[in-house]
Length: 317
Image 1 (tube, rainbow, N blue to C red):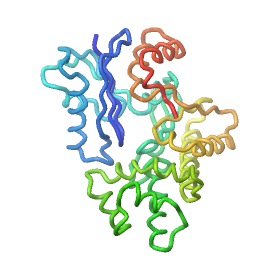
Image 2 (image 1 turned 90 degrees about the vertical axis):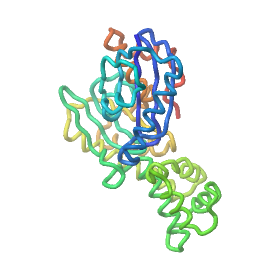
Image 3 (image 1 turned 135 degrees about the horizontal axis):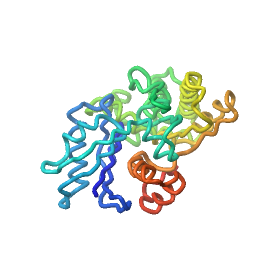
Image 4 (image 1 turned 45 degrees about the vertical axis):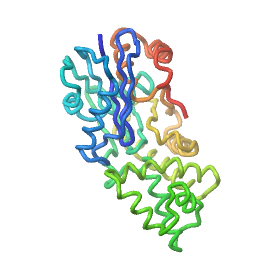
């Protein structure tokens, strides 16, 4: 049997091709496909490119299941190569995928901080979220949001009214835009199809400055952790039966440890008995995890099997 799981987001699209024995036949990666940060045509282009790279010259005749962790499954299906018969689309949604890949859970709370951010709840016949409205209206605590806080201050500092920061010089040097700053930074961001995505890609540089002790950059991460905690607490107030476990997921959590520490501290101020967990796997493993759980594996058994089969997708700082 042939299965594919796709995980899209603002900065990347991951895909894996595997079978019922967890044999890995192919992997592929493309640029981000979040419609809140990239045009639809660009998203579709990346989907098609990802599938072509995934199958190469070994495309099967039939795809038994397409697991989709983010976005509209029909849009992915329309971008599959011609001649490939698709039997079933399994739409996991970001919330269920986060819990499955994160800890083999099918109910509970997951808090996402990647290009975007949201607090997600999956209950009995219930899916709900706080946040997830995109960079213009929200996404507080996301990679884009934290990068924007730090970069905005770097721009203000360059013009004489921001808090002192080393990020201004780091941006100039790293991006090669020393002349005409900050207008050169404006051009760097807006001369792209997806300015928010490009801004989010500056987060590692903000983290580098934070690790060197830059207070404005440290502050951006600390405030990001608090913002994510407040969204989580709002969700818990709405669903007090949500359980004693929270799974964090998304690439922005990897950038700077004190962000996670601040998040956990704030959660424990209100709910000291709730445990906050790092995820087991990247989101793209949600499909294989669901298959194993559906076939009688416990979460722990599935984790061990998936670690052996897909070690590259273990979630690491």
